[in-house]
Length: 141
Image 1 (cartoon, rainbow, N blue to C red):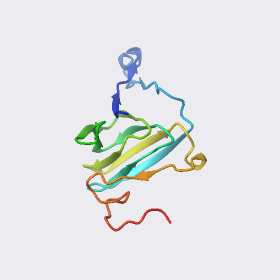
Image 2: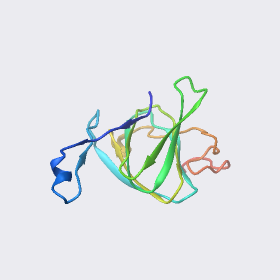
Image 3: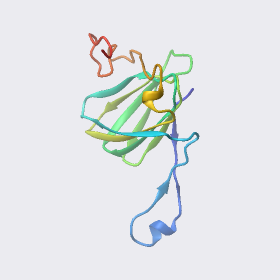
């Protein structure tokens, strides 16, 4: 249940031909839904875990830090993300994204959100009880 950074593979011909490059990520599990996520500089998204699906983040712009808890829940751990970085978040892993700059992320899910009985469980990762760090947030209505 540990969040990990995924390194891409690259056919170097796609770089050497002078047009840029193609970098490929291989997910561990099939993806069935993806979402485009905006996070404003200085704000957070997350502060929760998903009991029914794994999630992948692909940072498409900006800089941020994904914070989680160690497997015993006693220590904060983080992964820095910048444009082009990809991480894997297994189900049950608490996480929150702190946006250092305005960020955009594509979030890929291994189960459709609408097919989940309980897609999200809020967990205070040091920013209050809600998804946006609001300590008075009571959860979805």
